[in-house]
Image (cartoon, rainbow, N blue to C red; front, side):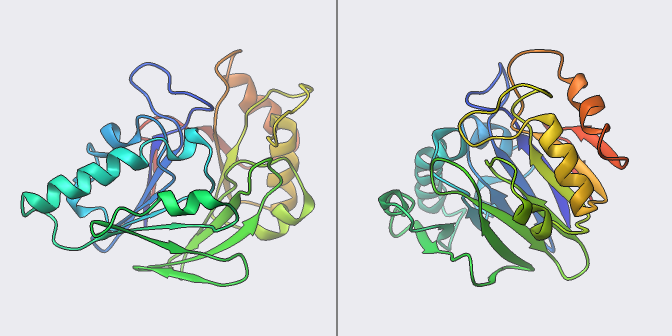
Length: 241
């Protein structure tokens, strides 16, 4: 199982970058977590568009779904060119009506997931936990039966998230603010992430959904005040195997 960061920015992409997007691959199966602004362009460095089999969306804020529309067109074109022969499946929640915008029949099909059930997608099993965010949003735990990756998506800190991420191999944690900054809009600061990682006993932490201001390496130091494991900043192309 290999994870590659496609985009990691909060709100909008920095130049030549993308907002939320994470590619997970195993056994020639390619799964994309979220599909934010700029993701489709950078995804092609690591996965031909016709070989993307599934997308799982955490919620419907634009920095997580902005490229879904152009992904529809990509699947249509790849199908017409004879390079794709099966529909692309996009999984999302039905907590609001925007679920209906995920499908683009017959090229892209939408399938709902639920927080109380396990989703099997290719070689991966995915479970979900509703987060603390103004828009309905779900954290994800992805496993291949040997390793576990937990993606917090967008959320403020709450104790149940630590239980959900317990002893995961990689915790992809949103970190939108610096220590002692007041968090707004259902997000975490570096102090929250340190507490989360410590309580979860995560084996490794990747900080993402990064702020557009400040000295971002300070986030690492601030997380390590509560957590003594490995912590890194997400960047385009960062990978975990």
